[in-house]
Length: 387
Length: 249
Figure (cartoon, each protein chain N blue to C red):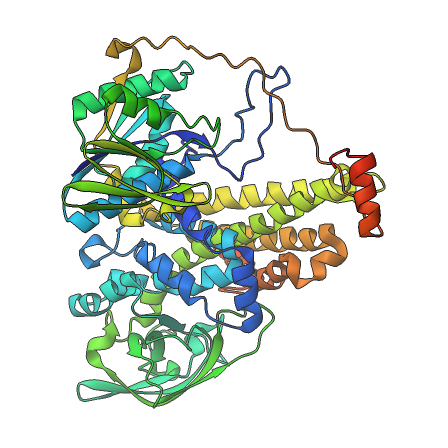
């Protein structure tokens, strides 16, 4: 057993930290309040090669593992919290189904452009009536010669304002006619053609620099060459990408939690009330120490899941547990940070309110804490399925 | 052009420095170590010269403990070609450092040595000048611009009250000022490539150089804590206080 990061991993962490240091809190605060996509950060991240971290070297990436990607995402969130993480998250994780299952042609067309940051991607999976029960999606792709015609609606589609392409989950066989509910679903790397797709931005609690949208897809034409893997196997192909997503989300939670904790600790050391720093009071110190302990534990779980994934071993329960623990640890840390800063914690100028708003999302996405607990109950503890 | 860039490892400028209770040094636990920012500017300038000329070799050199490899790797990740670590576990003064570097220069025969005008830890500002003297080479300190024309190097220096431009033949020693450039950060492919680049280790003792310190640090003291200022009602009161309390006018 070895808990030490490799020297390469330490160098990558130091490298991405050096990049992130060029984007101070004020950069993120301003972009969040102006609802403006962090293009400068995205470009810097792409130019330094981090978008291609998990893309194979043959396609212009660095071919590293999810462990390295997670370390990078944790640093990105530590520096710019979820605005930074979400700006680049989809380019790093979202194309994993293409990397694993895509045709040679699809990989050649999109992976190098993704690694260079020339193309933005969205993940169009969830629908208004199908989220955790993803097999119930209604968006339908009908084969028509050498292409498909897609109709339907998608919701919570991040970055659709910027995206050139979207990883689009459809049904090609209605659920009633599919042998199993998980059959008959098909995944595309479809063009986000504004003539056929209306993109409507949704207003949300936080992470305002990166947009979240509703998509209305009306007779979108998608070439058969944009199919990811085989027709009808979309669900399983997508499932392959879920563990990395949970691992990266956990890593981002740890990053945002540490960002909040850093601010709280600094404030607690400097703020003098009744003649001494407030951090000398255990009522302030203990919750921060507790937040630190929880973040450390979540990080170990996250690294274990990433380690398993990179060894090509099953890691479903570990990845889910990491996301569960990291989301709680992140939210707790952000909440304690706001409390530590008191009135100032509620003010935008002090950043922790932004982290607090953003961290709430991690308890919901990419999978709710409740669904994670269902998974653990059923698949780890072998209790009867509840739903 | 072959360029040698001496690199020192220093505490991150953003780190809070704590002096040890006995004044013998600073507490080194929990310190983040970085390349001396002026040396980082020197690496960046060397990279720009190489990129502009389309060829050349950049060699980094550090003198210190085995852990200094980390900063050399960072420099290699920025784009330097190879690195030399002269290993020494004892603290060395500026004269010993300059002597070692001169030995490295004699072995490597670079056309140009670029280094920071000073290291931000002890602020000595001596090594570049000592090297130039020992080598008998021209030197240009506090460079804010470096150009090459007609086989000569032209350096703009930041001096009191303005800029001074000097020209001299190579080989030479140039020390960098803050405004010379803004260093790049290493890219991910750069980091991965750097791991395969040569990092040669030499024991300082094996060089046959007199490393005995001429300089001894007797005591370090933290600067006095800054007291809060006070507000005065009028200019007249200020003048009065400057005269009677501060006794400066």
